[in-house]
Length: 131
Image 1 (cartoon, rainbow, N blue to C red):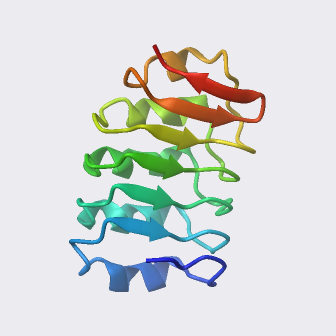
Image 2: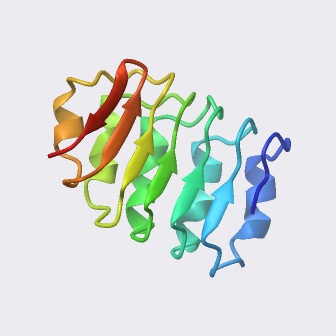
C-alpha cells in the first residue's frame, strides 16, 4: 500500500489495522507520530515499511517495530531516530536493510553492530554492513 505524500495522520492509520495480511506499507512525508506508529503493531505480516520523512517519529515510538517480526526492509530516513532507537530493531530476525539517512546515527555507533548479522544500514556517511 503506497501512501507516498498523502497527508496521512495517526487517525488515518486506525483504518489500516484491519489489513492484517498487508506486506508492504509506505507512508512517506505524512504526519505520523509515535502514537500512529504504535497502531502498526497489528500488521504482523509487513516485510517492507517506509515511514520516512515523518519527523515526529522518534526513538520512543520504535518499540512497536519489535512486533513486526517479518520486516526485511525498513526506512526511517528523515525521522527523529537516533542510535538509541536501534535497540528495538535487534530482535528482527529477517531484517536485511535499514535506511537512516537524515537521522542522528553515525556509522560507528555500537548499536549498529548489535543489529542482526547481514543487515545493510544506510546512514548519511555511507552504507554499513553488519558482520
